[in-house]
Picture 1 (spheres, rainbow, N blue to C red):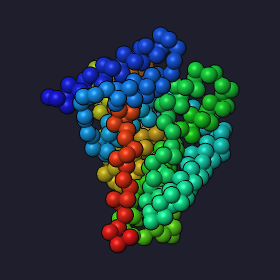
Picture 2: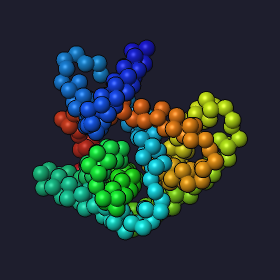
Picture 3: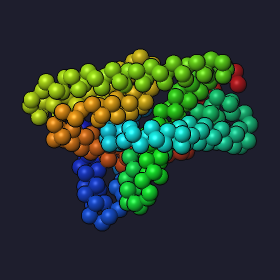
Length: 295
């Protein structure tokens, strides 16, 4: 019951901060981040520890769905080179720089652990980038590139992170084994996202009751993520492809159903940002524990 009370309080706080940010014209991710940081400084604040996999499924999946659903596939196709360059090239460059600096500061740190650290800090947040950019009214092409990059950089960074952790536990880091795995996971995630989008559209098109459709769409977001993870694919990439394919093919699905489901997902995302800010404590970050005992 204690955990349930904290989660409800966070959901209400996230909704209130979102309403306040809209009233004063401030991007809501900034308000949530500041509130979370301030909450972490309050003595006696309850501590809620969530499993990392649960946090990704419960919070990241609906946020990505909300951002990807409104992304324009036509604009992404027209700007695929800069989007891919930022989502892959910029993330890879950030990982390399962070890994090199980490090795210089801690010479005994294995390369795989340093790469994992770089993958943790490399990607920015998709929802935050979208919310902040829309306040600045940039040129449309710039907005499309940055929004598209913010959708896919999480997938590339998380893939590299998991491969680095696996290499750390195995004691080896071989590019010959990593590259085929990256290709297989990427292709598999795209195919799975497209297939599940067709399935959801087929199911929701036969549902006439709005409340039932909202529940199906809401739970479908988590089902897509969990199935991808069960198959050892990228949950992030699968959800992004799923959302974009659904948005393109769901013209006959009631707009009211979509908006209700996405707004319900987004409320959870707001509370997630606040909780992440509260729990962020870099002094507890000890990636050396991932290293093999022989190093």
